[in-house]
Length: 363
Ligand SMILES: Nc1ncnc2c1ncn2[C@@H]1O[C@H](COP(=O)(O)OP(=O)(O)OP(=O)(O)O)[C@@H](O)[C@H]1O
Ligand SMILES: [Mg+2]
Image (tube, rainbow, N blue to C red):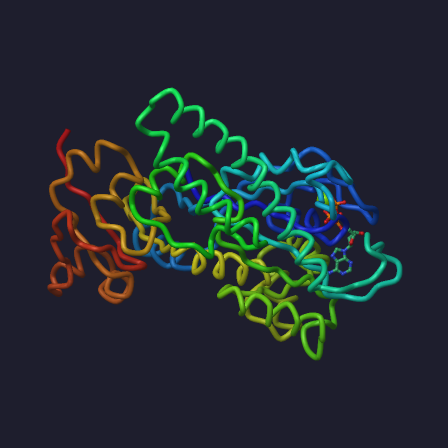
């Protein structure tokens, strides 16, 4: 399964507009708070021009992009953990995602309702972050009671669980996210089961209007805040992006160059998401299909094989590897081999972004 991102933010800030731009699924987005009630889920193929370049050489029957999954949920308001607005139960829909996209409104428009009746990015961000912290806190408090019961009944795993929960709860209590803590290996194993929201990496999306990319005080505030949290801001006009998404490839390019941009905001968002999550791409290039695969930066080639099929990892023998640029320069695997650019790598080899890999394995 590919990577998953959950989209959070106040009501009516443009979450579903962004989701539509990403997924072209035409879900409801309208100028009133709580337009979204049930979550929207969409899977997006990730554009990568390198796939087309590989396909020109290989002439495959199919070209398959790698994908990313997005989950658009209802807006959170202050007090959601106490039942305000639509409450916070819908957050369970993003507990199993890998990262959070936090949409913050960064434009003035008297016609678009703001739930607090004033645009204030820092307050808006704080409301959301506090609600995420409270949601984690409530969940872990229940777990803490269970840990105490375990200890009472003499179960060995009670104590380490209680220690870990004490450590996390004390940080949440001070209004900080779990991602600000560091953990050892044992703790990380336990943590996996918790599905905490505030441990996930966050990317801030500043939703600006068409003219809001420069000289935008809101934007500067969001960027500064994201920087203080060691993360990034992607600036997007979700409304324009949703319009661009409906154009065909050529029209899209024309529109973007008219706006003086080479990449759509969505491509920028995906790129930032890859960086944030420490992801990279490798390729397989056969006559049946040319395909992109997403892996973690630093994964070994046998782990990369496992992305395709468990048998590839288990029965891994060698990986015939050519860098993307060599593959293109020497016109494919054979040309690269003749030029001495094909490497036969063992299972410890750390995959580099863009590697074109042909796995040899036995089952
Ligand atoms: N960059 C923008 N500039 C101007 N208007 C925008 C922009 N982004 C979104 N809007 C408008 O804001 C309104 C709310 O958008 P949307 O429904 O996507 O918000 P939402 O965050 O999903 O809200 P909810 O939490 O209620 O589901 C829509 O009318 C949309 O067209
Ligand atoms: Mg919505």
